Length: 456
Image (tube, rainbow, N blue to C red):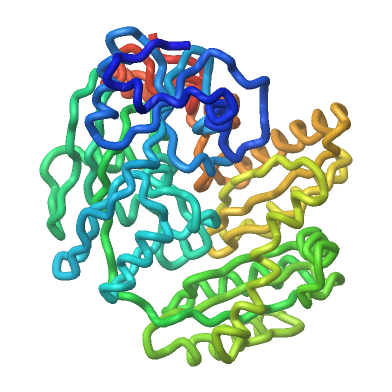
């Protein structure tokens, strides 16, 4: 295993079982675990600086890591690397109501930031499904989105400034805390979504907004995909856009109902879940949304009258991932297409599942076109897994053919490295690798993630 400077010895994880637990993130295991890696749990910025000084001097790869909720293999260990976990940098340094920002460490959990903002009457928008466990540093690394992107956007829309430690230990700051600022290139935007391939984020300044009202939910049932997509389009064009707009297809509904009775009709083509949180207008918005959905062809619309009913309508959505996992192994997709082509995308995925002989429940953030097909396979059947990977490839290519992207919010990680060139092209791929080399000339930052190999 890579040797560490003496000052880092107290931060090294030496217990073999604990150390192995840091080798993986939430992604399906793609290969045997490496044996030759070291885990350092940083407790402050000085620890991060020391690791990157040592790594640059010795040419040792570094894998930055937070809560390990990545579903794209973005935080998995590689042979000979130092896994640098920054969950311990979890301080909320400042919440500034006047200027509308918070300053936090990368280890702060998304839910903790939301709670701190709420105590000041403020709001932090990004809400990945793993918001109760994922960290802000990981959200920045992948430009995470979530259920409420249709109204509030993704992490990049909320990050104002960063403190980053580069290979070799140099510290840099990007962005600004003021409302406006255009001095120099937007390096904050470059680092958000870079998946740990340029440096290690050690401080994040995020924008905060006035808190909305508590959200209420409506659930609409459709007997055709086209009608469901027509409902999504109508809501997106509404002058007061919903804060949540999720689609659940027939296969997903049946998987949820097989897991437990959550009140979904298993003979429908799709279900939409819609929320409003507009201050002073939640009930009015939901009534208007219900009328729009009925006009689009909804066969039934249930509107929550209070928080308890709202949670009941969302209960099936919350257990969906667990319901899929109960069906076997799964490859979680993350393709984003134009909203107007959602029906084509879902129908195409159904055809792929039939052709490859695998079950593919489709659900996700219909309001922004970012769907998460779950390709289910038999855990004890290598042929089933091979067909699942063929379907994975088919879904990506289908999304690109519809004008989409290979990843909306999970990132490329290590899982989608083979497909990045399909979207970017050879010239752009090479240009981005040269850009990486400006910050990481030795190619030691998260090697094998995003790009197939470090730049020469």
